[in-house]
Length: 283
View 1 (cartoon, rainbow, N blue to C red):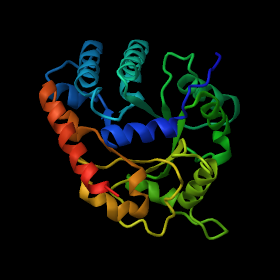
View 2: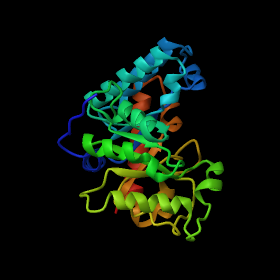
View 3: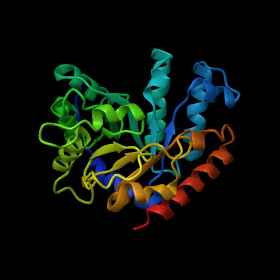
View 4: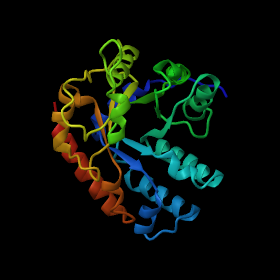
């Protein structure tokens, strides 16, 4: 595959989208229970109807979509084809797409994962990709390099909302710094000098409470899952993220999607979350 450089890097495009539409990110998570609640079969037709409905209802109003790749991949090649169309339709409608695939490997394998999602010639090309750094931050270099060349971005798992994450992310290195803090420091270095915002973000859970012991000022976006069904609210964001709250991209999935398949109800729910978030993070 070959790549070409978009006019504007991801961080700048994301900042513009957040300023224009608010920072809300809506997940596209077509798991079986949700398809059933929509009255859809857990099959390719249901997957396609679900994804198309979400994009058509919300693409003109939200800043970011975050499709969860696993819920498409479970259907094999036909599911991946639906994911390709979902990404293409969302981006064509002007919404940024963060592919939630949490890829992480080394060498040529990491390069292949990066090519699948960060090369503009790929049918799965997305504006950004979630990645796991727990083979060592340096293992992400192929993805970092390709993201820079293609104008895309990365969201690195740093302080995740799942309770199990703490045993790795809060573990302390010999230098006295935790693993999560180390990942944040790497990202701050990647984003140094970028304006108005860097393209290399962190995944930081909105459910984690006081994070004042961590330096979240990485000059990049902070993708924050946990709003809605996981228990966090928009009002919690300033206390969790402090001075970095202006760069937070709060993700809501079930809190919005449970209102489908009615397009008007999806729009109303997303609008309500967006207004609450915009008010909470106003700086």
